[in-house]
Amino acid sequence: MEITIFHNHVWDMLHNLSERMESLFRPLCDTYGLTPVQMRALLELRLHGEQTVGALSKKLCMAAGNTSAMCKRLEKSGFLKRLRDQQDERIVRVGLSERGNQTILEMDHTLFDRYAEILEDVPKDQLSQIECGLKNLNELLQRMGDVSLL
Image 1 (tube, rainbow, N blue to C red):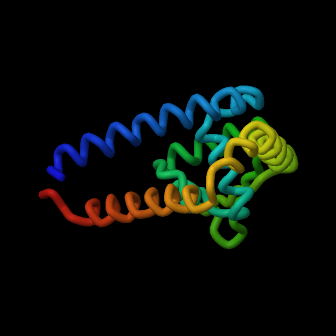
Image 2 (cartoon, rainbow, N blue to C red):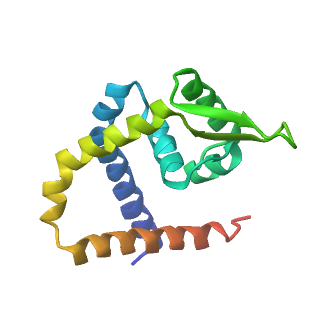
């Protein structure tokens, strides 16, 4: 396949996936006064526990300054707690507050209630293929990103 065609197909698919994800999760996020990125941050903290703002920014593919500002807003709203490292006060760790943990649990239940029946109808091997395809695409894009264009 010609590189330009491949690029355009991937770009279009990623754009469509992003729009669909946004339309699926936006109403649920709005219920809690969150943006989809804020929801993703809370989910990341629930799955992997307390971490530095820098580590969270890498997992969210965001600039550290933007992640820090987002975490300050989430702390002000009561969704997370921010703690300064006692040995090095420049290091800020973030974790879910009780409200943040409860919110993610409620969101999980809502998503399960809404989509479990649909996902149960999809054969497990098809779900595995989708996951594998996305992983392969991610690895390919990583390899491509490792090659400097200049």
